[in-house]
Image 1 (tube, chains in turn green, orange):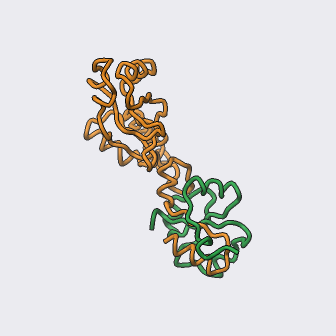
Image 2: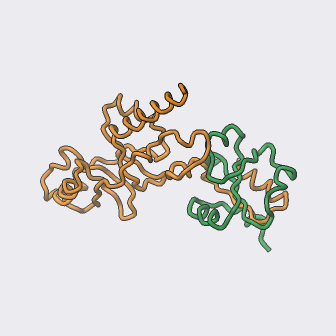
Image 3: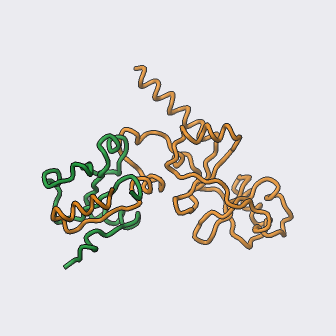
Length: 73
Length: 169
């Protein structure tokens, strides 16, 4: 059983690229206008303010999910 | 923000949640592709030449000069074994006594930019300061290459002309 800390594993670029190859879901949590301007390839947009059970219902529960924003915020 | 998002996802029941803490800025700064309306805006990485010659501390100027000449460059960058940029040799430094050590004459800590730097921002600054080329590195200082001012100007000119043409059609 993974601990809560494990659930929130912080990753760097190299690990991110490995997870993307393993079909991880990328979630851009920035506001929609920022996402529209530029986002990581294949990322979906769920702004932080709208992150809830309804907006995440389409996310698979059996795949890694990676959240990102602009930088170390 | 990504920490709060990751926590929220965990509280919603997702069990494999990761946080890419360095975020989009890090991805862009490493010159990786992006999607979106700004994806085609020209950036430094597009016109960066990775073939710039390099040398390491402890080498002699004669070796660095020979390497630069053979490659058709008038500069040679000083890097660590891990390719982190320490300095630059150009002009008089590169023409110094061939027996002199690189360490003694290199220009320390040259200005660097990241591959995602917008040409629209950097080109006018280079022009204003009469800078002919600039070193491009990753966020952790590893060499990507050198961007030549002329190449950057040319790319920006083409981009603007294309944009005007598109807007006008």
